[in-house]
Image (cartoon, rainbow, N blue to C red; front, top):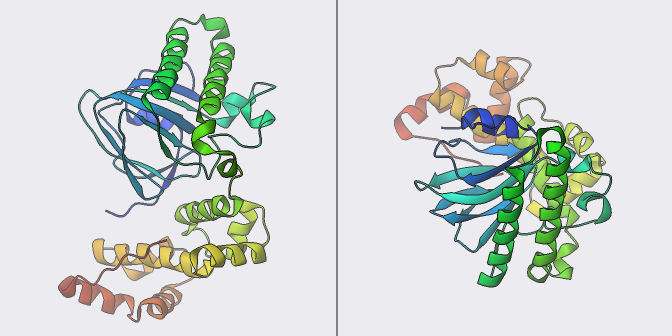
Length: 304
């Protein structure tokens, strides 16, 4: 089933997975992967990193599939599209989730004193560690999690921020040998392109204008146009149109909505404008496509 990718917060995780966690909506740590998980892709508004210590976890990040091993350090960041594929029963883990706001409450933190860290976009999502380094990281997680479970309430958030910051610094120091100095200089163009794709996935119904996305990314329309064409080989307007067409095909073939309703859903001025746009990109009118799809399964997915 086709889903629009949605922004997803730590509060959303707590609510959907029915977790008992009253302490904070900006921070969460897990020692067990919940059996109940979202069946859809999300755009996290938080950072997450850690490892599994027992069981199996399969995930997809930015359309890349990963099956985590006991030596896999997983990292994902705001703006990366994330989806859990499967979790084996009683999978245990050491995972920490936190927003940038949570860390930025500290006057000095990894975001303010370092231009790049393993949390930066462009650094690998899954890093395979040697046994000794895995044990070091898990040992640090274990010590910090033990402290987090016994903090006094009046100062809980302040201490949790400092402990999380310490965990990030320790992990970053250990990962220097895995990332390498050349890779720490993040490819900003690739990062911007990923952010553009994720914005399109979230806002294609709202706007098909490149200027809208350039404004959200704080770059000029011309710069975004050239960058997207350089990295993807496609014009950015083509990628936006592909997302609209993909959703239009789903609505036409998988729902009973009439074309006026679909045109309204996709933010077209009227059914005629929608029909003209659809035929330009597919060679079929919406009615022709619905009729042929019913007999020929004429549905194609456009990849962003």
